[in-house]
Length: 209
Image (cartoon, rainbow, N blue to C red; front, side, top):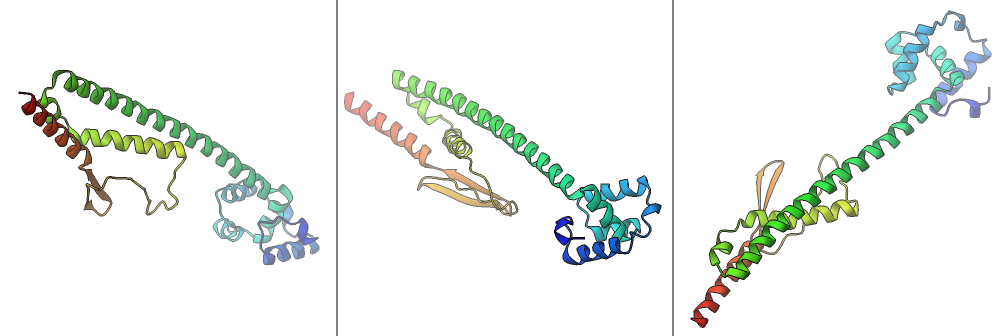
């Protein structure tokens, strides 16, 4: 048998072994049952090597190689993996769309909340509105916009064990490590901005009084 006609998932030794097995008249082939073939194929599709299948089922490796090559197992497994990959891509797209919608909803909600707060402050000149504002939540509002930008841009982690996330924070940001897997980023920019705005408003009130 020409080596080029043998399944490409076999190594050189397995290809030569299969060739010799066929030249010798495929001894023992008549004793193979459908149950044997099903067990071999099931293990093969789960990712086991020919050597592992032979060891697990206590079967002759040449028999497994012959049935695999004759039945086109390699093509079936590649087709199966392709189907899994296509399905996974669709699932990722769906999750990505849902995440994008969720983040967009957060941005809309916080935008309306703070928009109403600022409008009320501008119309009433009530400093307490600014002073009592939750600046942490405001910082989360801006971070949500950054997250949305990354999702839309298709950013993804290349190292699953040690994911790298690029977060743009202001110069007033404080970074502290809570534990081995958690890093807290506190952005004081928004807080300082609101404090400055309140102080500016007080100064203007004094000048106008």
